[in-house]
Length: 382
Image (cartoon, rainbow, N blue to C red; front, side, top):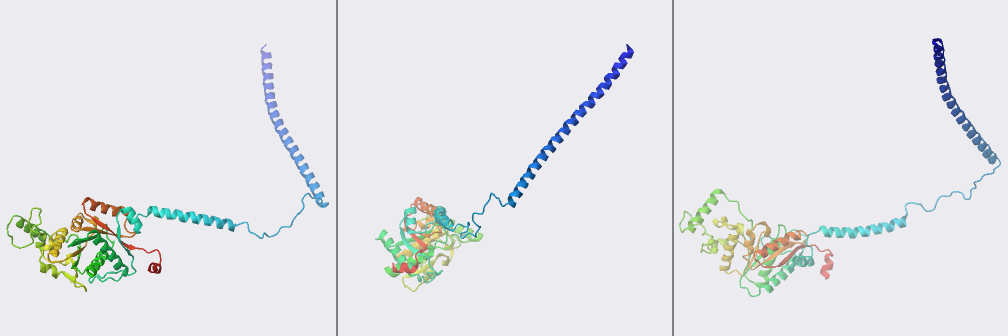
């Protein structure tokens, strides 16, 4: 039995080895079959292509072709690109819509007021004068108040007539000319108005320029002003005979702070005997230590006492200081100068609102630096 077991084990080992070899041979057989099949397919394909090439060569040799030349190639007379008619139509449409869109966009961004119609519709105030932009930088002489722009004289005359129409029965007029911000041309308008008033009415006229809001004072000057005010307020005499107090409880008129000789000495005479220019900065003495509104009030009272009939006040911009509202309240009403297209309408509306809150009347708007979009020779013919 033991021998048989050994023999069987040996046979089993031999059979297993043979089985493994058979499996490897089967895989090799399959691989070789794939190669043969691929080679057969390639051969058939090459044989088909060779036959097609032989047939094509035979057809070419016999000039039997399936393609015929119907028309020989020629150079086109009209280029395919660019399409000029289409491009022309597209450019017109793009230009038209672009121009309209740009105009609306610019109008949306433009908050200035450039025409009489815009001013009257936006600000709800009448335009009393419309002064065109001058080619020369100086249209009014700063000292002699001579007007070199004929249109300014015409518009100043119209402005004066509107003011007289608003207040026809005043024996003493104080016209305050101001603006909302700097650079609106207040000096030009006030000077031209003063010149026209003096020429037409033959009344004593003074163009009062306020100048700077606050002069720079040294500590000694401020202390002297404070001590002098306290001495006068409590009825004591100080070392100096300075200006009287302007406190609310004081009973002294502001005109008493400046003498007639001091005032007339500061006048700048013009070619018209009834027209004088007075600049606040030219006044000397301790009077200049007082606030600007107080000094203007004193000067106006003194001008009335010496027989002046019309005072045109060249005031600083309304929005620069609350003190300007005090100056504006000294006049019968305010003429607000507006540079055409320069100042945003929101700024002008804020200045008008400040005047309304202070219960200060506004005559109207003087539109300055208006641009004439129509050529000037058309304006002259019109």
